[in-house]
Image 1 (cartoon, helix red, strand yellow):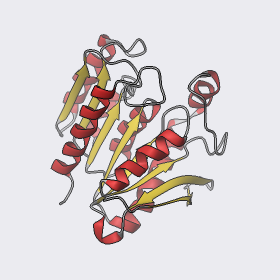
Image 2: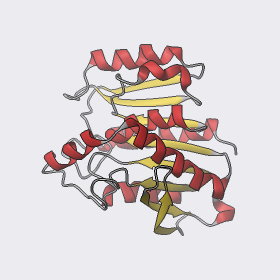
Image 3: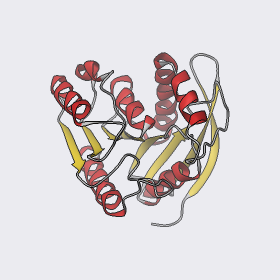
Image 4: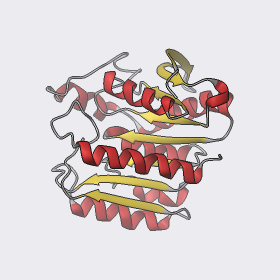
Amino acid sequence: MSDIQSEYVELSVADGSTMRAWFTHPAKEETRAGLMVFQEAFGVNPHIRSVADRFARAGYAAIAPELYHRSSLGFEGSYDDMAPAIALARQLKPEDTENDIRATHAFLRGRVGDNIACVGYCMGGRVSFLANITAPVRAAVSYYGGGADVVGRAAECSAPMLFFWGEQDQHIGSEHRQKVAEGMQASKHPSVQVTFSNADHGFFCDQRSGYNPAAAKLSWDLTLSFFEQYLDK
């Protein structure tokens, strides 16, 4: 599958704000499910848009919402200068993010029904966990997203969840990963923890210094397999 359509759309959020999002999808008859794609701290930049497009080519109606729309519309950070991205990420409020998740889910639901999953990278990995406890998703995937601060809400998860970590990640250590794994035991849904021994933070992103092609490929294959298992055929 190679023919996809991609465009920016605007979503209405419950707090009265308007959120731009990158929406990309195959032909309707070829769409297997909906997918929320949550950004790194660097925004819905070319990398995240390309990831969404890649999922679209795999058959998903994928949407990547701009979570900084209240503070810095259209922000696309540089991987060589983390300070602006980190500053914006720290301004995010959980209640605002949950409203953004609901608006994104509602948009997809109007197009594909209830067959919706989510995936997130870095900051978006934590947002993917929030989506799992905020919206009725069928499956959720988190790439090196932390989440130890919110895993206490694991009992609220609506779906199975897959976590990816890098053993060489200096931002997320083994104690943090263990806390997430133990916290997920409170969920009534299964969870999977995958740690790549030779991978660093950001290993999936080919624009970052920590990119690991082997780990990126295997995690992509596992993600598609995970979605195939839990989403309607």
